[in-house]
Image (cartoon, rainbow over all chains, first blue to last red; front, side, top):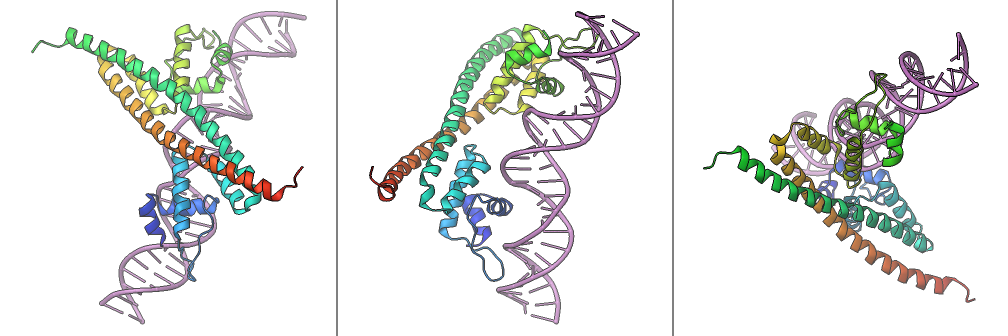
Length: 127
Length: 127
DNA sequence: GCTTGACCTGGAGCGCGCGCCAGGTGCTAT
DNA sequence: ATAGCACCTGGCGCGCGCTCCAGGTCAAGC
């Protein structure tokens, strides 16, 4: 699969895919003799996984570490698990903060709606 | 209140406070004749508000716009409300993505625990 | 008077996560 | 043969959100 096809399937730019490979976010992709990348389904799965994790805010650094451990084989299983647990916990903390802010925003919006209504009654002609 | 005191109370550096003021995240703080900032309780409330929103990932740009509208008075009420609604909706979308990833991570961690247990049974001496 | 220390300003620097671009290579079609 | 196109590499640039630094001012204490 060419890089352009992966771009479409994973909704990502070629620059980003090459960047991910450079920094080790996805294992090195096989090349045709001419040097052109030839992605396998497995590669695409990695891309999807990374995009997904990135979308939730996991850092490139952490994901690169995970991939590096993965490539070292089963001896790193527990280390990988620990990494995932840490990232999950960080995510949970972020989400809790966001939940609180979401509530605050909703409360603020409610009072704004009230105040807007009042303001309109005072400042707009009756139709 | 001096900048150092606000730093402690809001858990933020002086550089950040000055930065926030420069870019309009908090209204201009009153100065002593010597030029030294003198924060009021109201100023501190703004700092707390901004820190809170920033912690949830709202962008500086958006918050600065909100503060700018705020300072224009009641005529901007509905515009401010719209801004808050947009930001809340964006936050909700981010949280939903994160919720999905959190579940994925939990599932992955569960299978890792299983595999770790297996690996240990195969590779570790029985005590 | 002099030191000390907290604060000031303007501007440069940094880490992150890409994005962009120039210059070159190789396949394909005409 | 040649044109066109997709892809390659290396490296610079950028937007964001701070962070740090040099050089200066001011007030208080000794």
